[in-house]
Image 1 (spheres, rainbow, N blue to C red):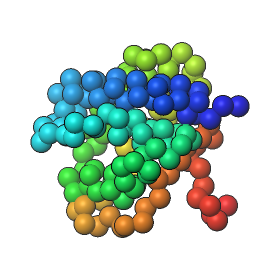
Image 2: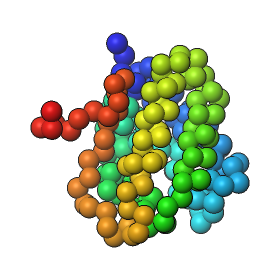
Image 3: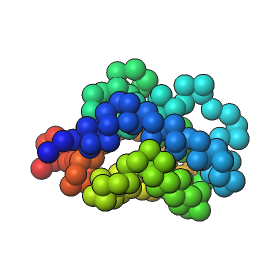
Image 4: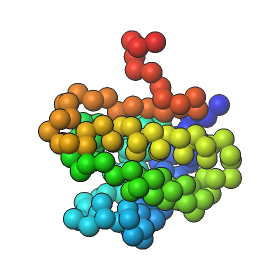
Length: 154
């Protein structure tokens, strides 16, 4: 069975997904607020590299851009934003359709579940302050069965 990374089209497929999601969120009146302060010029390739690594591909994000703690800090200290999170997930679901990753129902559901988990759990733990984010968070991986256990936690 292919990894999620492979099933989603590898680097090219996940870059297309990141581009589609980014277009969707910038067009969404609620989610676009998160980008109103500006964003990095290389936001989409960085996002794609994160998708690659989280979905079972090479360590593109960690090797090029940073670590999970840095990603979580970027998403922390803004209070709870459930409505925005739900809209971001809806944009992701639409982006899956935009790039054809909704044709395989199992793949679509697993990718949806991963993204929803990442938004509602991984990125939403530190509402109060980015200073609360520990320095050693692991970038969690996801496979066909869900969250991959950390080594030694079996």
